[in-house]
Image 1 (spheres, protein in one colour):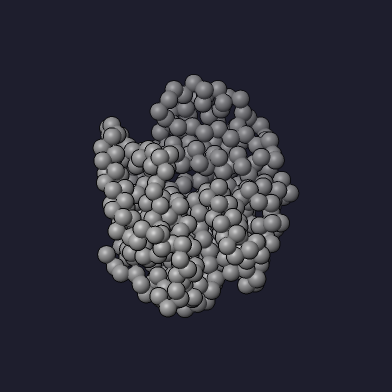
Image 2 (cartoon, helix red, strand yellow; image 1 turned 90 degrees about the horizontal axis):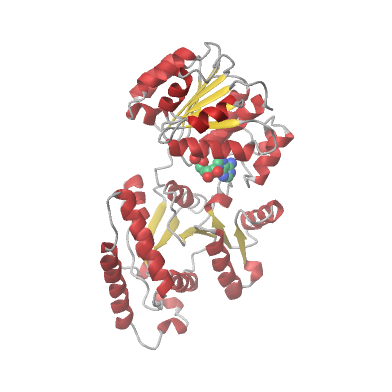
Length: 453
Ligand code: AMP
């Protein structure tokens, strides 16, 4: 199986674009799907978003198309939603950056004029939602006879959304001789029967659904009011937990990752901790991973983007300094532990504005993550005005996502209450800032001192 992207027969333009995107290793779906797609076979991939399934078909597709040719599309990618269509196009743009391939994305919700103009200029790849593709096709602007590859992405979602008649119509208007690729998050009976009609002797590839949190991982949650308190908690856990042998700290952005790294480098020394994010050069990233893999450093601070596809799984502890916004990343993150060290521990820090994603994660993994009390010696910081505002805005946005009619303001009360709770907690604590005292080792680790609420 291909360990690196160099193992595939990609050309230089594509390999350079992959390196520029910061991908170091193909993900399992990429390892399995790219070779048969390059070979021209029909492929059915059962993989969820977050597994790298888009690049799994986009990369070989670009390799086959190579450069701009003629006026008419040679590949059609059908997506259930405009958002996914845009994401796919972004992927194509990234990987086709060193080629002159032309991509047009077609979706509804706005007038077709500009999209038609783009198609008329000549196009190699069309990414489209089913209805809009057919509208523009029926209006006579798309010539399908050069189509060689048809991709149906998130096929299960398309069927759930009632797009089956449009899909069937599309199948009628594309050439019979073509390569078909079908991706779906689930393998339902409907998907199975679509595959039967659509694919010829397909290679079926399934990657284990990510939404199963390993049983060997003990999950813990701390609810904290703000970033500074997260840092205080991190410090205490590192002081108290003797069994942290190999730790990855996940952060949501490279800015947070840099801050956490700087804090740890001051505490333990630059040589003891490494940081990994997409802004670091390729060599720096590889060096960081290798020194962590070889146990030269005990702590790696990383963002999800930088760590995806990197095979470091024998860690004793994972700390989610931030709750991942791409909720599938939670499972991916905690899966790094609980392997070589029989039992792993995954600790998550969550502020009030992160509760929203936490709820979604708990639904996804079908588990409630046990909440531990913040150890007494952790100093609970006041939430600075700006951070309080940011949190309130974030909670507003989340509410609006759930309910587009939501007008705002009522979160203020809720988050103010939450802050009051933290303030009361703070007042309860020893006024002479116990966080300044060195916590005694005999106190036991957070896990042991943790009382479930
Ligand atoms: P997808 O499942 O296609 O939606 O991809 C999920 C995320 O993983 C996207 O942000 C991709 O950019 C990223 N990704 C895909 N493949 C890789 C890889 N081999 N290495 C690192 N990141 C990747």
